[in-house]
Length: 164
Image (tube, rainbow, N blue to C red; front, side, top):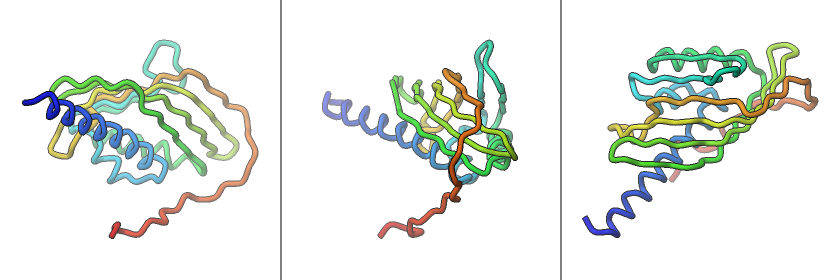
């Protein structure tokens, strides 16, 4: 393989990993459970607050439990937004590690609020479905549980079913 072919392959892999991160953010914001399911390896782990002293620790093992955890988290919220900025990506053949900085805000149920900044630590693997998460762990960096104001407008998918 030439250096140009290797460079192109790495760029394509990095783009696919960035796409998985973007699809994760989109799926959880729109509560797209099928799209979310497609991002995970069958034997995978999702950990939120997975470091000592972290609040609200939640974890799930296996794609069915992971989707069930997302359902629980999303059904509790009348407002939820997730912003992700892809950080470092390290690829070694068919496996990769990555970091992603995240900002979230949510409201509900009733009078509960949160805003957070944190980091996703990811282990991914290449699959027939592209790059998928093998392990995704969220570490809180900042958390604010104070109420915030504003009106909620439901997120609606306004894109046509298929791009022409």
